[in-house]
Length: 160
Length: 152
Image (cartoon, rainbow over all chains, first blue to last red; front, top):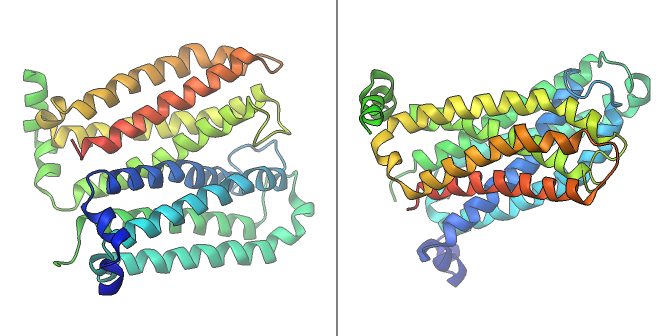
């Protein structure tokens, strides 16, 4: 971590006036695209939003934008971490956030390999199957936790 | 200004101000609502360019997304007001905050008074695309102003 903290780019991000604010702004704009679309998709899978559109249609159209937003979030997030690796590495909330990110990824994987495989059976129905509702509910809970942990990272940093 | 001072001294404002966790806790809801608000705005505005939910026509998409936009705006305004209260006097004179409030007013007026004329229009038009760009730019300015509050 110390080695990482001493690389020129890391020092630059940490010490420059605009480094952090700019990267954080990109992180927040990426959040609109990624988290916003994730929530809209989850709401569709819960059967409460865009009910007249087939679920697979919403998935298919939103997916490329969500992937784009996710790449922006990860890239800017890595840069924020890279700006002060020693400090963030020691933060318990950083670890919690990372753990929940992995769980959110697994949730998507399980949904795609399970309930979503038979999307044809329930695509146009307003009432979605329990598997879709559970995946959507879990996703919303996990993303709430990820945002909460992200906020906690900034407010409860370990003494460096 | 007396009103702002009174707000800042109110019991609720003081409770948030003196707590180590209430401010970030309210911020969680502000950020989640930001995601939904930003996502709703982007989804509808992308449709003007034939992107995103292309299989749905614009008036229908706008109608479907509208309740979620309104819900997220309500959560943003409520949580934002609480955050403002806890630092009322400091915020009131913060230039980034003033910038944010100016663009928030413009974005709300545009979204409710101008934008619907174009989402209801049947076919794609250049004016509609302009409206979509203005909408996204106004909301982006609100977000940028918000980010800047902590740095000026």
